[in-house]
Image 1: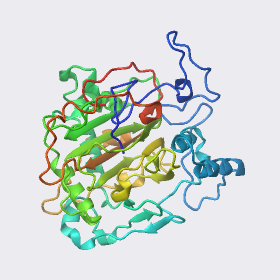
Image 2: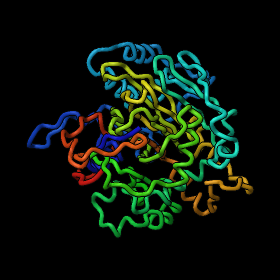
Image 3: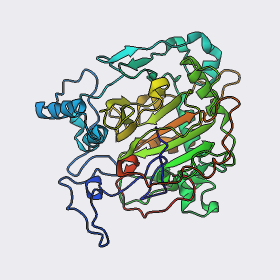
Length: 441
């Protein structure tokens, strides 16, 4: 869900280092002379379609599909899941990062729950239908919520948004939230005046964008992360003097979801937006820098799908893999709040369409009084839809401080330390330059 970060190393997103060279080539580099291991057996994924040379990569199997996974691949995945020992999480991360999509039958799909999945109870009376509508959500009584055996406090809510309302959050993540005074990865290596209006500088280029990989990327396509509220910093973590107002619409949405999950009084104090493409991944990490761990971590996904890995308190514990689709909400609380997790792969949505069908639905004309949802112009949505054809946006919201709690006096100077390990980063196939951070990453 994303919080570990070092600077803009090879084009990274927040809480991750987006390394753009093929992952097998990154494993070993001889010191001093830049030598590297031989090229991988297969070419790296295409930056545009996510496939490899010789044809596009298909989407994940649909529920009820008759496609079958070969026995050797099923046995390999099962063996990795059962296997403990040193860094079992990393082994499974690499399995899902590098294996063909046809190997994903063991991934939990909450659109067709079974096995270790069970129905989770929500606090229906904690959110009025009117407040749910104002946040762009269905009444809580209509939501489906699930838990996973072995992961107390983990809640998965498949797309509870009203038709057309996901569009608002996509537009906010691309047009409004990257604006100053919020912080983004591009601030690390661009002059301040160059990052004032990423949307304005990118919309025409995105609208005209074709399918050629040789076309230059717009600034929005170079966007990897944005931080809101208390801005996370790799060296100093959170601090009282690095704070800007948290968006009121996103705070209201988060408060309703948290209340429905039993966390009334939740305060949205910090947000991290991650922007993924088909060749992106989010490395193994724990979100532990908040001073109050009694409050949940909320995650909202929009656009293309992904595989999410949820592990244990130690990396030696093998994780459970699950799909996240557009509109899905994930809540990590209680004993699941401090578990290792990662995103090894972004996938085309299972419908096989350019964007998921839930994003093709327009907003109703009569929004409720006090709604935080705003109508998007057709021109704005064309830009958003073009971006989402090869991308996924994830918003993670957290409460940093408990009621009445303050930062310790040394909060601006603690936490300096080691560079993150290879697979604690967000990685992407690219040949970008390394940039050492001076703020967040």
